[in-house]
Image 1: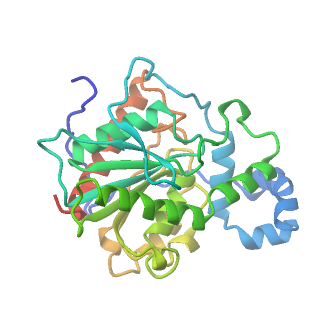
Image 2: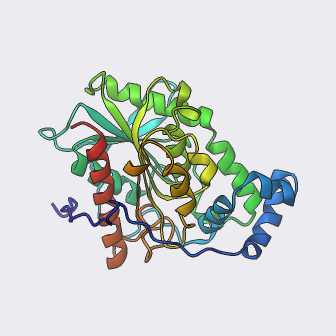
Length: 321
C-alpha cells in the first residue's frame, strides 16, 4: 500500500537527541503583534509579563507561516479511519486503526489537531500512518465541535481576536473532558482497562499535550495519566508550561518555530529529562505535518515521514505493545 511508509533508521546524537538552534526574532519584530494583542491582555507591559518571549514568537509564526489547505497534496487519499460519536453529549472522533491482526489493546494514542480542526485530510493521513506504525489505536476528538478557525479567515486580520478565540476554544476544562471522553470510548471498544496512553498535539495542540503530561497541575484531575507526549510544530507555549511536566516528551519544531533550548533547559533538570527528545525540521514551515503541509512537495513529504518515524519510535519506547 502506497499510504503505509517504511521505517527509516533513527539518527541521534551522543545524548540520544537531536537539537538544532532555531532563528530568533527580535522583540522589535514582535512590537506590532504586542500592540495588537494588548487590548486582550490589558496593556503592553501586562502582555510582556504574561507571555514568554518563546510564546510570543510561537504566536507570530502561527499567524504568518504558510497557506493552509484542507487537502495539501492528499486530494486522492481516502482516510482509512472512521468517524464516530464518542458519547451522547461528547464530541465526534476520528479513529485510526492498524490492521485487526496487528492492533494492540495495551496502549492507545490521543491526537490533538491544529487550529484548522477535524476535517483536514493531511491530519487524518498522519493519524492513519501513526496507527499502522505503532500498532495502536489513534483517536482524534473534535474539540472544536465542528467550528475550527476557518481556512478562508487565515491569516487573521485581527490578531487579538484570534488569540481570544484560541484561548476560549482551547480552554482546559473543555479539552480535559474530551480527553476523558475519548479514553472511555476506547475502553468500551476493546482497549484493556489498564491500557497506557500517549498524546500528540499539532500547533496549539502542542500546548494541550504539555498540559496533559503535567500530572502535578493540569492533568491532576483527569483520572488517568499519560505515559508520554509529543509536540509537533507546537505553539502557544513557553518554558513555564513544561515546569510541571511529569513524563517524557518529544518536541519537533519546524524551522521557523522558536528555538526549543529554553524548554530543554527546564526538562533537563527533571528525573526523566534524559528521556525527552528534540528534533528540528529546519527546511519546513510551521504546520507542515497538518493543514499547511503539502505531500506533493518532496522535502515536505520526507519531513512528514521522518516526523512519523520519530513519533512512532518514541511512543513504542514508552508505551507497551
